[in-house]
Structure formats: C-alpha cells, structure tokens
Length: 203
Image (cartoon, rainbow, N blue to C red; front, side, top):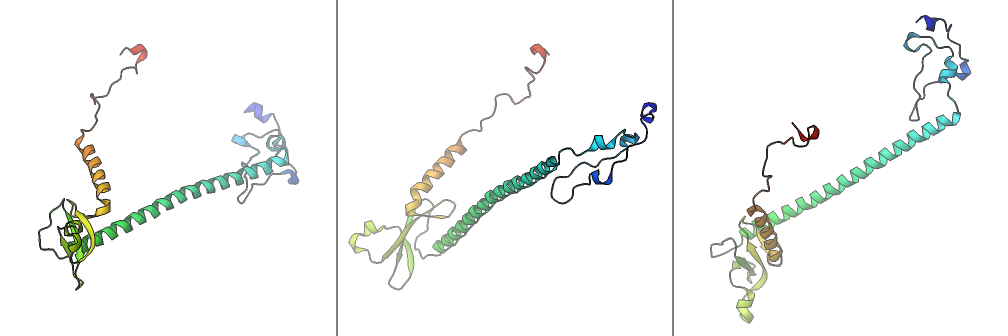
C-alpha cells in the first residue's frame, strides 16, 4: 500500500484520447478504471490505450462474423427440425388414411366370419354393393360374376394389408418377431468393477 501511494496521483487522460464503451451490435471493450482495486495507476493512458485503431475494426468484424455463424448454425438446425416435422406430418396423414380404409373394409358386406391371417377378395355387384369373398378371380376364371376391386389380408391387429404389400409386410413382421424372440444381450457381470483403476493394479 505504501509503495502504491508513492506512485503519485493518476495521470489525467485528454478527453479526445478517452475510450468510450462500444454500443450496438459491434465489438465492445472492457470498461476501465484509473484506480483498479483502489490503487491509483501511474499512467492510465499507457495502461488502457487502445493501440492500433484497426484493432477495433478487427474486433467488430470478428463479432459480426460470430453473429453470422451463429445465425447460420441455428438456421441449419431449424431446417433439420422442419424436415422432421414434415416427415412426421406425412406419417400421420398415412396413418389416418389407413385407419379410414381399414374401418371402411370392416363394414364391407360378408357372409363369413373373417379370420386374421386370411386373404379376402373384394367384389362389386351391378347394384353397387361391395362384398368380400374367399374365392379369388383366378378361381372364378372367366365366369367371375362381378367386378373385382382388390384383395386384402386381414392382419392379427385387425388392420388390412393390400395384396401387393403383403409380401413386404410379412417380411417386416418376420424381422420384428425374430428380434423379439432373441434374449436381451446383457453383460455376464452387472456389478461394478474397479480393476485397473488403482495404482499398479493393486487395491
């Protein structure tokens, strides 16, 4: 404290050489004081002088570039989220369409009890009535009495799969069943081990 007192009063800095805090979106300098920690500086001007004026320009350019990178990074992340939202919306639309189709098919006229796992063939009479049959157009041959509209497989969750998608759907179900039938892969020893964590391998 005594040594600091011998340094004398703080040197007055000319008004035109004083650095003002930066405002706005540009670079900002750290506020300064002529008595840091209560001790008067010998020469605040030499301690706090700005140096090359180009340094302030470089600082402002750096801050601006940082803003641009942050904005670009946020934009890229938002684009990914937007694509995911669009994909989820498409999936939701497909789910609703399939649900409406399945409900309509369950209301189709049929004289037999429908059983999951079987394929049913949809026909349309001259009157406009639609009905399910277990007889395929191939089995009818040239004597098929009504217009054939399509074939569907009744799944065990009571959903309907169009004939052209049956093979793909069954393959997916087979993969899922295979995964479910396999036991979970657990490590043989689930207790914590500290081997190798102590010095020279000794506890």
